[in-house]
Image (cartoon, rainbow, N blue to C red; front, side, top):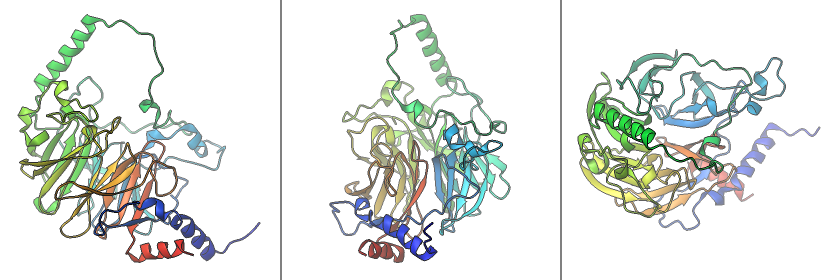
Amino acid sequence: MIRISPKIGTAIILLGGAALIALYLSDEAQTQDVPQYVFDPTWPKPLPNNWKMGGVTGLAVDSNDNVWVLNRLNDLTSIELRAELTPPIAACCVRPPSMIHIDKGGNVIGSFDAPQGHGMDVDDEGFVYLGQDTVRKYDPRTGELVGEVARTPEREGGGRVGLPPPMQREPGQGTVGPVYRFLPRPPRPVIEADPAEEAREAAAVAAFREKYPPETPMIVGGLEEIRIIEADNEMYVADNYLGGRVLVFDLDTLEFKRGWGAYGKPLAEISTDDADHAYTPNGPMPQDFAGHLTLNVSNDGLVYAADRNANRIHVTTKEGEFLEEFVLAPGTGVGGSTGGVAFSPDPEQQFLYISDLTNNKIWFLNREDGEVLDEMGQMSENGGQFVGLHMIAVDSEGTIYTGEVFSGERVQRFVQTNSPKGELLQQLSDM
C-alpha cells in the first residue's frame, strides 16, 4: 500500500479542485465589478456517522456564518442505505437527520430530525423555521416544535394537513429516488375522458377556492420559501396556492400582516382561473404568478419574488408596490430559470445571484435593472458544477453556498477569487 502524508493528500485534493477553476468562471465576464468565484473542494468535510444526504430543499446562513441544510431523506434509495441493515451488507450508508448544521470549516456542529419540508430560515437567536404544510419554528438544541403559522385545515385536492407522526423508516429500505416522478411517463393507451368526472373535479376545485379565496390570511398551499427580516420583526413566506402568494407574518406572534400577488396586486385580486397563471416559454407573461415562487429582501427594503415557472423576478416594496419585472432566459421550459434569490456582499448589494434549477447555473444580474452580467456553472456531476441546482445562500463575506436536488444531493461552497482561500486555490491551479 502506498502511503501519502496528510499534507500532500490535502494538496492533491486542492489541486484537483483548483484545476477546474476555469470551468466555474464565466468565459466572457462582462464587468470586472461582478465578484468572481472559485469552487472550494475542501468544504464540507465528509459527513459523520456514515450519513448520506438527500436532496437539499432548504439552505440558510445564520448570524455566525454557519450553514443550515434541510435535506429530503425520502430521496434516498435502498442501494444507498445498505449500512442500515443488521448486519450491514455494505460500508455505506445511513440516513442523516433532516436538519444538518455545518460550520465555516466544513464540520457538522449540530443536527436534529424534523419532518421533511421545503424552504427554511434561521433567526438571530438560532431558532429554525421550516416550511412543511405550514411554517413551523423549532428549537435546534432539542428539535422541539415551539410555534407554527396558522393554515387551512384542508388542502385543495385532499392530502394530509398537520404535523405528521414520527416517520417509521425500515432499515435499508429507500424509495424509487428523487428523479423518478419528474421523468416523462411512457405512452399509455388513450382513455376517453369522463365528462361527468371532469365536471365533478372542476366543481370541487371551484368550491375549495370559494371557501378559501386568494385573500385567505393563512397558509393554504404548500411552502416554497421563508425569509426572516429581523430589523422589521417580520417573516416573508411564499406558499404555492394559486401559483404563489407573498405573505408577511409578525415574527413574534406569527400572525398574518399583509400579502400580494404578481405585479403587486392585492391578494383578493389574484385570479382563481388557472389559465391566468399559465406560461409558455418565450410567450407573454401571465398576469398572475405561474408557480414555484421564491423571494428575498434587500438591505434597502425591496422584495425580489422569483416566479420560477415564468422565468421572471418581480421587484416590489415591502408593502407590495410593484416596481419592475426582470425576465431571465425566457425560453427555459420544464422547471424554469429563476430559482433562489441572493445578493452580493457589498453594502449596496449591487448584484443579484439567481440559482437556475433547469439550466444548472448561477446567474449574476445587475440589481438596478436586471441586466445579466455573468454566469457560472453547467450541468455536470463534477465538483463545482450542478445537477438540480435548487438552493442558494450567501454569507457576510460573500461566500456562495448551493444545494442540489435530483441526483446532485449535495451542498457546495464557492469563495471569491480575491479572498485568501480563493487566491490559494488559484495559485495551486498554476502549479
